[in-house]
Length: 166
Image 1 (cartoon, rainbow, N blue to C red):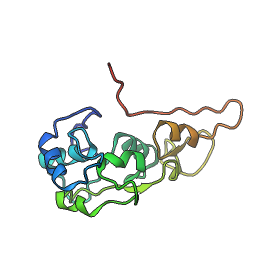
Image 2: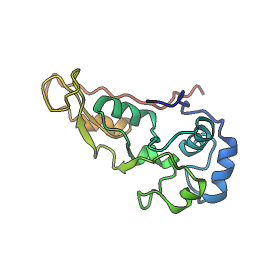
Image 3: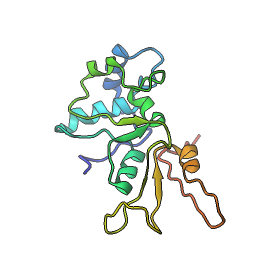
Image 4: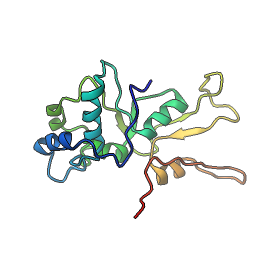
């Protein structure tokens, strides 16, 4: 259950949080901006006061959880601006200096690595006709995860990235 309204992709209200991140993050970290997922997480944490067990979820991760009932998993692409180290594909030590707890960071997997069948209307997650296959990933990997291999197969990809107006 969301704790409050989500922040849009281009929301830049985390200026103070970005300054804190700049003090501990490596110079080339994608988390070093007011629009980063990490700045947004810290911004929301300070205002919403989440309790233990609260998950940090990107929009695509929430949607994947909603469709499958499995929350707390994300892919490399979504986690880079949350502070993920792209060389180790793990959460770096410097991140703990920003005290994201009690919010739990997602388990990170390769794009399209985590795959599940969507829940049916009765909540059953077993593979059966008319249930969709879902996978972690951004638009290109999400499309590839659909593996449309026969006439009549369809892959619908939902992107959470905002459209630029110039």
